[in-house]
Amino acid sequence: MQWRLLLLLLLELTARAMPYPITFSARLVHRFADEMKPVRPPTGYWPDQRSMRYYQMLLTGDILRRKIKVGGTRYQLLFPSHGSKTMSLGNDFGWLHYTWIDIGTPSTSFLVALDAGSDLLWIPCDCVQCAPLSSSYYSNLDRDLNEYSPSRSLSSKHLSCSHQLCDKGSNCKSSQQQCPYMVSYLSENTSSSGLLVEDILHLQSGGTLSNSSVQAPVVLGCGMKQSGGYLDGVAPDGLLGLGPGESSVPSFLAKSGLIHYSFSLCFNEDDSGRMFFGDQGPTSQQSTSFLPLDGLYSIYIIGVESCCIGNSCLKMTSFKAQVDSGTSFTFLPGHVYGAITEEFDQQVNGSRSSFEGSPWEYCYVPSSQDLPKVPSFTLMFQHNNSFVVYDPVFVFYGNEGVIGFCLAILPTEGDMGTIGQNFMTGYRLVFDRGNKKLAWSRSNCES
Image (cartoon, rainbow, N blue to C red; front, side, top):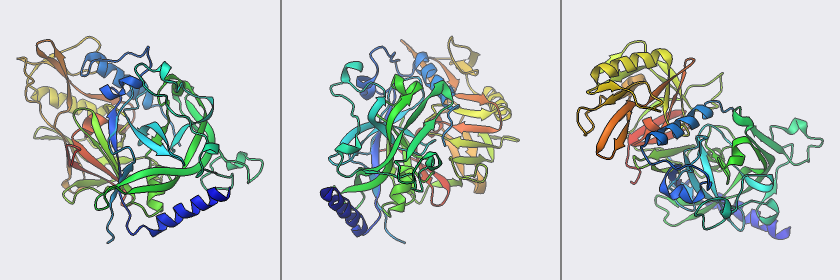
């Protein structure tokens, strides 16, 4: 116990002694990237990229995900100790990108799903009911996934029911009891539950401090029991919430003075990506303000003033939308969807057609085996800021080239849309929580 107290004291003093907040990054990996094949279930279907089945499986995850319910100083960048890149796991639930993180003392690695629509970081822990972690369950996996246990980490610390982050403290018999947590989902009775603990998240710094490591205290869920989709390998090694709530990792890093109150995600056309904690983006970027939901900034919502197809800007196409990196495609309110698809249909150079199994209504056959020039799709915001979706279609390829393409948007009920990852490709998106704004700039995710 004395060694554990000494270690925590040294970590706290180290964090206080750091002269500048820094930025952390992680490599993003798409759920159907080749890198993720080793951790897919042996019975899981792995579609060919850009095939009809590929898009069907992504859309299935989107539809399920829309049912989810969750509750003057120089700065540098921080990222998980494994690097800034991310990856993805093949499944039908809709989580798109994953990254490796290290937790505890000594450190243990976890492959966590990334979710900007929830807050809590949880990992499988002292498991009562968890997804399989053995390499024998996953094809071509050369190592087991890990299970966390607070008793095996010298830097772990249980949270009591009296802690300000203990939402279920009213259910405790004593204020000193360990704080329970539960994150519930509407689809397939999916949930994660267990106890809240504090431990160390291992990060690397970018910018002027080269090869510098940082140990940041964070609160995480010791996920003892999962249900529904989590038992089917949706997020077998845990989930990293990036939402605006106080319990998210970006919030802890900012409150510790390590980073700006922001993070960025960048998605490349090859389904790779990067994540940086503390990134505020370049001065040349454009931006728009986040909007509250029922008076609270509980999720990332923006307000679109109008939509343009090519050079034609359409009337009565304003709407609100959640920015959700965990959704593959973009959903628009019915009246906006109708106006956009009608204008797109008039401008596109191709014959209207249908493809068996296609989830989209507006599909076309090109006049040649080359993809024709497709009209741009632009979202307009206040102060004349614009977000150009340069390639709003998904293309289907055959043995001899392009066989067709579809406008990759879908209608949704109600007046709230979802900006999915297909609109974010090619952009560095900055979720600036301190200034309550979303910013964007074109990027190949490498610089």
